Image (cartoon, rainbow, N blue to C red; front, top):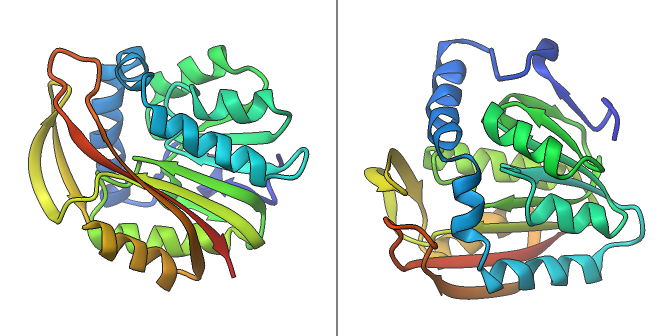
Amino acid sequence: MNDSQVRGDGGEPRGGRGPSAEGRGRTAAAVFDALGAEYERAFAGSAAHRASLERLLADLAPASRVLDVGSGTGRPTAQTLAGAGHRVLGVDVSPVMTGLAARQVPEAEFRCADVRDLDLAEGGFDAVCVYFSLLQMERDEQRGLVERLVRALRPGGVLVVATVPVDAEGVEAVFMGQPVRVSSFGAEEFAALVTRAGAVVEWAHDALFTPDHPAGSPEPHLFLHARRV
């Protein structure tokens, strides 16, 4: 992975393009810094996530370039892909998560950064993974980022995205004991968002998952695999 594929603004480890970018970075980072490895343990049992990764592996050519947005602790996504010989760049706003990932998956590269503030080269990746990392963004930001991520794929490249498909905008909630502000879309609207961004949805999977955590409760999950036109 090299800087022609993805570059941080001025080389800074986080967004740093002004108060709004830095403020939103601290908010998300604070939540996942606090959760750390607890997040990995809570979601390790997701069979739907594993099935999504297996499907992605079947679609990738050897040594593919993959961007993992919101890479967390590096497991299972980066670890699975790097273990199969792919070149993985993980990006996460949380320095605690990034540090854990670098130790757990040394064969991948991890960068502490806000993906919204990265310069993503056109066609720089064979696949982009976005597992549940859009939910703390406003809806307009989600739309804009998905469009940018599709453009960061080579033609025919695969976008894998997972979300909680609920109609919610700027809702205050508690996630694993942490206060968060979330926005999302219903399943049909989210699939339409991906299509409008220039990718054809080839596989969709719904699941109900309960995180393995004292504060965990059943939540709907939607996984989409789409190919850049």
